[in-house]
Image (tube, rainbow, N blue to C red; front, side, top):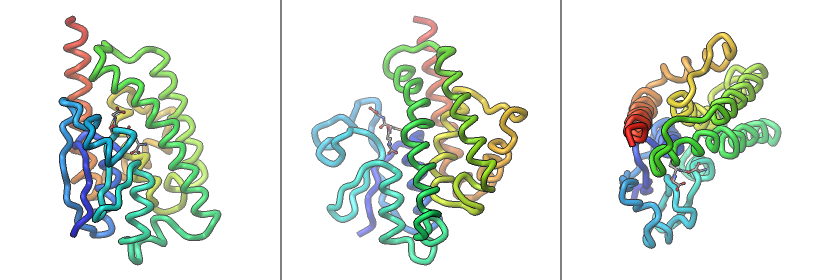
Length: 223
Ligand SMILES: N[C@@H](CCC(=O)N[C@@H](CS)C(=O)NCC(=O)O)C(=O)O
């Protein structure tokens, strides 16, 4: 049976996993989680993913959370000849990819999450100056990674690009990337946006995320 992925459209990490599945030609069974009713915090969901976050993978009873861990797992089991390019086995090449995956998980994504959840759940009216400067700082880090390679962790596409590009669709809904300050990031993001997997999966996710944020900022400002 096809592995099951629990997702919402607007989730950057869920989009990263879906793009990877598309690239390696893996059919996933998709299950939408009802974020508004907090299904991701329900006892049944928490049994699958103790963190209560999206996405979660269920591969015939094997349960896994965290998009980065899920992508690495899916590649190792189903990646075939695409694995070596997307997540090379060479220790140094792989370590550079891991470095950017951890940057995505621990810095870039967190800097959008501290704005997105309070906006959608807790009535935040707008990002603070600190939120914006923290994002700007993270864009500076990304720019430095891109000064070393053509893609974020190598001279070709890897899973790190999938993670960062999807997190970026959420980040730019909060703070645009200034093309003059961050020319390498701007050029790289444009290049990724031209890929069919991005157009089909991440672009609609980005629209949903942006709409949810703008709607919430407007509604919260009227209260
Ligand atoms: N590092 C995790 C982040 C997962 C995450 O925080 N997902 C968000 C949706 S995009 C979520 O479920 N947030 C709900 C919460 O944190 O309560 C990953 O890459 O999968």
